[in-house]
Image 1 (cartoon, rainbow, N blue to C red):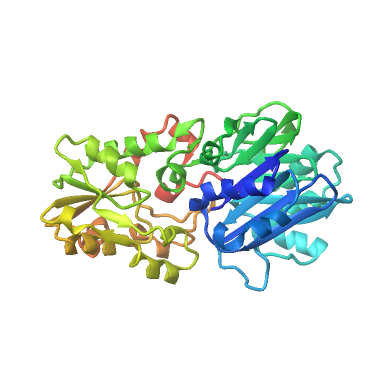
Image 2: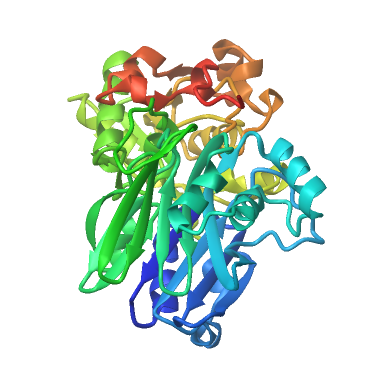
Amino acid sequence: MCGIIGVLNCPKAAELIYLGLHAIQHRAQEYAGIVTSDGGLSLFRFTGPGILQDVFNQNTLDLLHGQSGVGHIRYSTMEDNPKLDNTQPIIASFANREVALVHNGNLINYQTLRTQLEKQYGPFKTSMDTEVILRLFCQSNQAELAKRIFDAVCPLRGTYSLIFLFNDVMIAVRDPWGNRPLSLGKRNGSWFVCSETVAFDNLGIETVREIAPGEILIIKKDSLESWYFDEQKLSQEPMPHRRAHCIFELLYFAHPDSEMFDGQSVVDFRLRAGAKLCQTCPSAGKTVVAVPDSALFHAEGFAEADPDAKLVLGLLRSHYIGRTFIEGLQRLRVSKVSRKFTALKALLKNAIVTLVDDSVVRFNTLPDVVRLVLRAGAKAVHIRITTPPVTHPCKYGIDTPTKTELIAANLTVEAITAKSGAATLQYMSLPNLKTLVPNPQDYCFACLDGDYPIKKD
């Protein structure tokens, strides 16, 4: 999972990109990068490992000249080759021009395409699937940018939200399944594209609309031009195609203030999810505590649905520790969990606690949290989880690559409960989760039911 942003025709574009990426830093923490254009033939690039404030300062931002640019924060779904530059944006040349590309998603036919391209054109410079897209774009013989981009995306299978940057043009692309969010914004005469609308809200940018699934949107200073595509053809008219919006974006990954997937409010979804969890998995614990920060609104919805329950901020999260779910290596996840939370004894002593979490994936966090709550004096802990058991790996960009990592794929609910130290543990059911979205057939639930909508062929 990554975060991307693009800016066209905006003074101090690099600074706006930095601020926009900061608003979506929750999506990725391993690498950050910015490329800008001053309208000339060359692009300016700076990238590095770490979160934004570790990579950039005012001096580096000042070196990124121009009024247009793209930015990227990366969370890798595979272990990187340390000898290669696996940061984005990536830059390439075509027809005596430069192009930069940022990508959020995951290509499931990446290895096949990479092998074919290396046989034809030589070795890759990175180990990222994004380079496949850029290679295909640069090798196209099409003169029109929309047709050249279609040549690049037509062979792709998987998920991708893309932003291409040229010297005076920005192009946003979203896969036909609409798996990852991508939105268009405007402020005065400047155009913006971003993974999440929370970045627009923070910067006073008007959200215009979502980039449609299967849309190639060509953005120039004074015009917008839309093309549409599926796996077979390119058209100037929208084409019907099955959707596969990622349910995990709404449950966990996205910022609560964002809107996505046909204008759904993330915070509203989480409040309703918490209420549904309370209605379908009631608990004896009337002191409701969230596992912060991602489960805060799930817990609020749960508490509001039970007239005898009270929401208590009994756990505090250290904001000097990043999101452990998106930490690249398992050993780093485990080491950070123990430093992440503090339980407030004054609020938890003698309480029967309902501990609400948005999801349980690897089981890195929950046992330690239960121990903290009990150590703070709680009489008992009852766990309630909004997401049904995660039993299958995600192939589309979430870092759960094998079943061996997934606790629910390897243990029964009873065994997980015993291992957690809680008195009871219940998950929301998949049928109940599906009632929370207007068109469940338009969503991907593959990590929960093993039904992968996007195939290699």
